[in-house]
Structure formats: structure tokens, C-alpha cells
Length: 121
Image 1 (cartoon, rainbow, N blue to C red):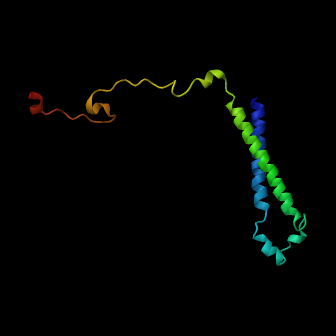
Image 2 (cartoon, rainbow, N blue to C red):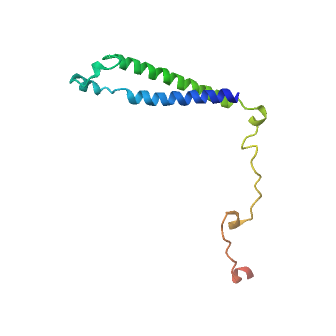
């Protein structure tokens, strides 16, 4: 099961890197204005509009693969043995000893000495 989780993690990392690369290669909507003045977009490898369709579809495929791997990793990480599910933080809570009265109950508090006149009363 661990080998399958590692394989899904590798596919997720590769899809994340491909999403980053594909988004950086794509042109924004403002790039159309520069293309109308002869920036050479019509002479590209995919044609005038072919690159936008190819890159956007490739990005959609990579994003779908990324989200699928994310759901798969979430599903695989939830499969724990039954013994560890009942072991929660509340089950392991430490029993706190009762503190002394007054200021000593506050951690780090310094107890002031009692005055002699108050002690004689």
C-alpha cells in the first residue's frame, strides 16, 4: 500500500509541475493586442489559435490529474489500523495534580511572605 501511495505522490508532483509550466507558457488576454501588431503569434507551431486550445486543454488534464491524486492521497492516508483510531489526544490527557491554594496555583507566581502583625492576629 505504501508503494501505491508513493506512486500517487510522484504523479501528483509531476502534474503540479506541469500545471506550473503550462500556466507560465500561456498568453494572457492582453497578449492579443500585441499579436495584432505583428508579434508573430500566427507563425507559431500550433497556428494562431491552436496553441491556446492545446495549452488550455493540457492544463485542464493536468489539473484533473492533480485533483484526482489529491483525493487519492487523502483516501490512502485515512486508512489507519483500528487500534490507533481510538488513541486520541483526549485519551492520553495527563491527570493534573490539584494545586495549592492562593497564588501558588498560578504557575510562576511568587508567594509573598506574611507580615508579622498579620500573623499575630
